[in-house]
Length: 75
Image (tube, rainbow, N blue to C red; front, side, top):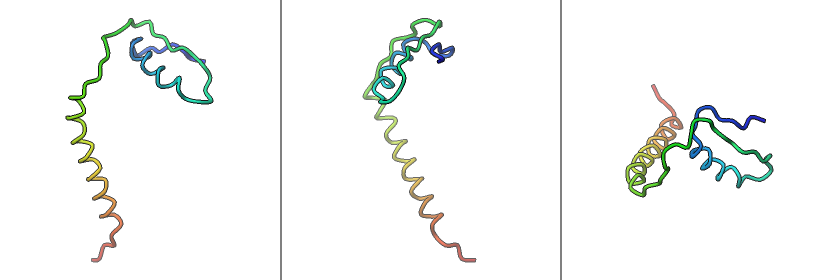
């Protein structure tokens, strides 16, 4: 079973393992990296202010595309 990650730093792997550990029916393993600890990870509520409008546009465009594709085209 592959446990060493060659791309990410340890702090990213620790966060990922925090999420993965909650999954049921999975084999336990410990991800590790030789690339060092990495920079401190933080979540900012201000980032969501930037992300949410983009998500709304994506949802709107997806909806419009579905509406357009579901209409019959008359030539």
